Length: 254
Image (tube, rainbow, N blue to C red):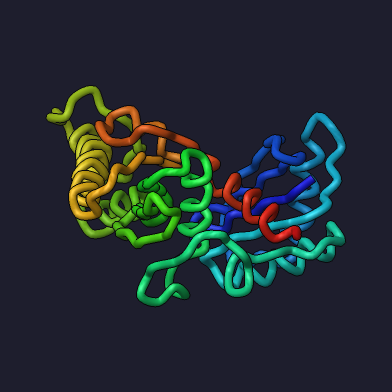
């Protein structure tokens, strides 16, 4: 099986593929202080909960947290006895990067772009709801063009709690109305519908600017909630990054 690992600032998402078939995934907290042994034991324990034995034959990793990257590479090699490929320099993506400095593009953004383009083979915009909310544009030729980076939903919610003395922490959930009648409902309306407005507004501007049709993908744990309210999101895949890692694994197996 192929082990895929997506390391974000908040969560690490681990997935398993049996050939092209998705098997299962797990989500754990991204903590830089964890050792390779702690992560190895944790993954083995999670794998033991699956309904069939798991044998890892290869591994592919995308990370935006450098201190965790090396720890995970060591963990994979120590506990699963396979080399862990890392998305970055020297890896074949099959996608030209048109960013002014290609090294500045986060690995997860490239992986998402590859997965979305491979699904439809047309121009697309990928919105990833993570620690940051990112927008990535791919041309009809399959080139990574660029995008936008905004504060994520969690960051926005936490900032309100920390910086405003009388505002509480709230659950990120859709309120019954846009016009809140209490503090919690008002904050939820601002967080949910504000994020929807951000997405729809930026997508519209990007479509106007690039001048070619763009299918719009959403990924990340909160993608279904935002997509349900959005007028521009057309496709939702919470595991788009893991599927992109599988594609990159195949492209680098030759």
